[in-house]
Length: 172
Image 1 (cartoon, rainbow, N blue to C red):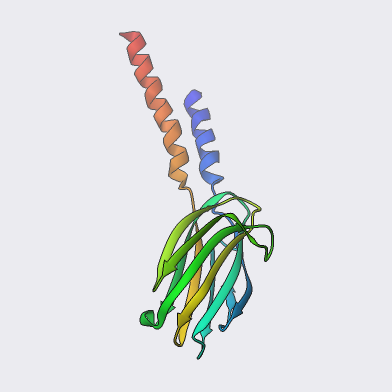
Image 2: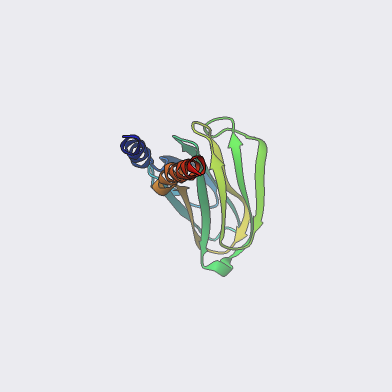
């Protein structure tokens, strides 16, 4: 009976694991176009183009419905057209709000990716500022890192093995 109950609980945990729903909003750009292509999924995609301008910036707001780890990737085509830029990842005060004290700055000259942890209901800025380049296309991708269902099956299995070990120790 205990094994059947343990299996049922493990099954409920494994079925209940879902990736977070992310929402990305373009908040404006200078010297570049900006668009959000895929939104309200566990992966959101955006991008834009830079024309003749030598200096440009582009900003996005990011939110999540659950606490989750995310991978943020910026890519530039052609790769050599980006002279320099500063990527900013920060918790912000609200939609299109100002940066808070937990701001991360990354100086880049090409494709770049990093991981971060989002808290549900908190707004984050995913911006590129002070960028200099010739004509190029840029893309930003944010994807939730789901917790594998196997993780929730591992804990009950481990507890079962510990229980068997204890039963063997008591019998000896």
